[in-house]
Image (cartoon, rainbow, N blue to C red; front, side):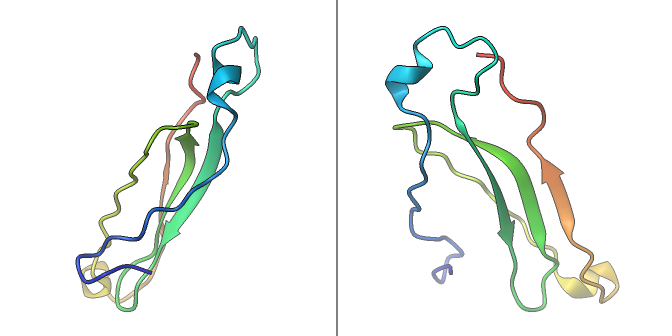
Length: 88
């Protein structure tokens, strides 16, 4: 749910503790990965996958929703992937 400006209230998500990220990990992922979907009436749904979330770091994920009229009246979801895991 957003306010009049289109912003949500902050959401706290679990992630591995910052202290754990400072140790050699090998292949261990030292951050949380999340998928987020934004939708609104009369707009095309948009999703972003594999968003990295780190302990004690504020992350902002922006969405630009396309007016459904601009898509020919069809709500074909737009999907993005943040890509490969970070090599920290």
